[in-house]
Image 1 (tube, rainbow, N blue to C red):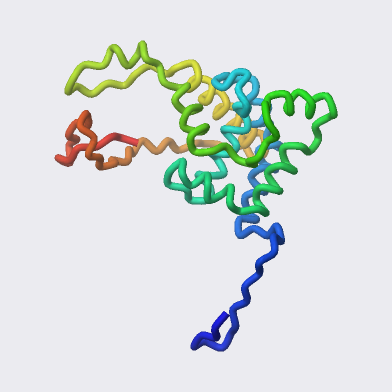
Image 2 (spheres, one colour):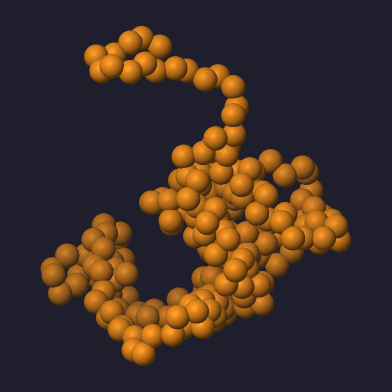
Length: 204
């Protein structure tokens, strides 16, 4: 590549070296295993059923997306384009699994698996499985409403509880602080209500 002003040179590498700029993310995959969260998701979350990707794969992928600064499901494609990260994710999934487990996992796929992480469309379809149409039917027009947790959301709460227990077991604190401050997110959706700051928004 052409030499720039600063005293270093750029080189273009056409080969696939399997490198990643996100090498810190696999540490969280280790934490995921060490704290038993993978098994907790398998016990408490049953949204995907017998579909291609398991719930634990979906949760793991969305945690990695969040940790890497992803702003939307489309950023899963950015992570997927990182060949080195893809190899690490596949290795983490296969580690410690016997031949029978690997065969069961392979049978979930009609064709040969091409992605290490779910596509944005698959992730969106999985997240839609947490929606409870019955609760939404109770919503009144132009009035704030907090629906009851669906079974899927309740399962994620149980997983979160197991994470807290795992952390507490390692270094038990004498007290805990609950941060009750909500973040107002301005939105321009037609159904959004105005908040006390006089802007249409949702509470996160």
